[in-house]
Length: 223
Image (cartoon, rainbow, N blue to C red; front, side, top):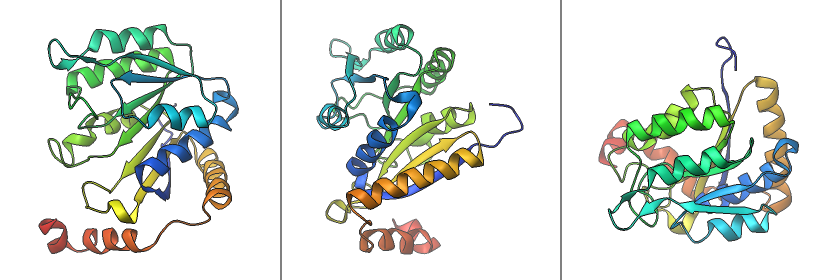
């Protein structure tokens, strides 16, 4: 992406984080450049990843994310998976509070991973389900912000189930970062169609609760 171009963000409400990931899978599967891509998932992983992406028609490749002998991220394994992947491969990356291991990348590891993925032209799919429940709201989004600042096109699924206590209301967002405004407009049309065909519209109540809280400084501070 040229320096003078601004990354464009398309955001649509989804049925919590699970629905956002499902919507992302449907969208990417219908996108020509990802039609034959593979989804890379680090293990152990949240149990819904594999069935969600398999349902959308993606082949799955697994690699070791966690080293149980040290209780830390198996970073060499992650880098090896990226190095061995084809161009355009999609990597599922948990932004923070890794489920189920609890082991997160350090800022230094995020920077190295981003550099390797950029060189390999790998595509990031961020799952941000616990923002604010780890090191802090800003700290927990470090990886996502870094990839965005480096000019990646990417998708990010965001859930408010945990950090707002809204499991039953199913409040989530799918964000898509594109290189240009034209691409962003086309992305929005595609997502709008998929939402209409699948569940028509998202629940309003939970999202209004989030809006009320975040629009008020006192309520935000209390939250």
